[in-house]
Length: 215
Image (cartoon, rainbow, N blue to C red; front, side, top):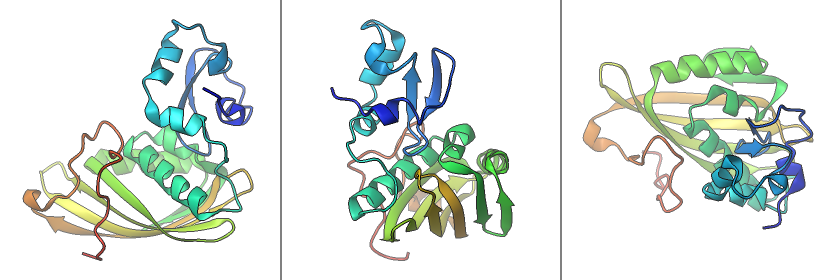
C-alpha cells in the first residue's frame, strides 16, 4: 500500500513513540512509532492500521484536503469532519482547527483550541447518544458551507433532532480558522429517530444520510 507521507507524519508534529495522534486535515487517528511503513509486521500499531479502513482510505489519499477546494475535496472534508465529531473526542476534533480558530456556536463566541475543547466537553456531557450527519451545501476557494442534523437525548431520556448550518473558512494548511454555526433543536419521540447506527463508530458508508427535505 502506498502511503501519503504527509498524512503519516501529521505535518511534522514531533511526538513520542507509540502514541496516538491525529492528522490535522482529516481528523483521523494515526498510530505511529516513526511512520507506519517502518513498523514491525507484528506490531500492535500496524495491526490497528490494517483493521481500520477509514484510516487506510485517508492514508492512501493522493490529494491533500487543503485549499483551493474542488467539489471532491470539499465532500471529503465534510465527511472527515462528520466522522471526527461522531467520535465525541474533544482532543481529536480540536486538532482540525487552527490554534486561534474563531467560533460562533449558537449564542456562544470564543477563540482558540483550548476553548474549543472546553466547549466540546460540555456539549457531549449534555448531548448523550449523539449521532451526526453532515452534507456539503456549497464551497469556494477556502470556504465550505454545510447543512447538518444530529440526534441526541438528555439525561431524562428526551430525544431531540438538531438542525444546523455551518460556515467554514480554512487556512492554507487546511485547518479551519473560522466556524459559524446556527442550530435549533426539535424534541422528537424515540420512534421518530432516523440515526440508529452504533454510536461507538462513524456513520456507515451505506447509510442514506439526510433526507432531501428541511424536515
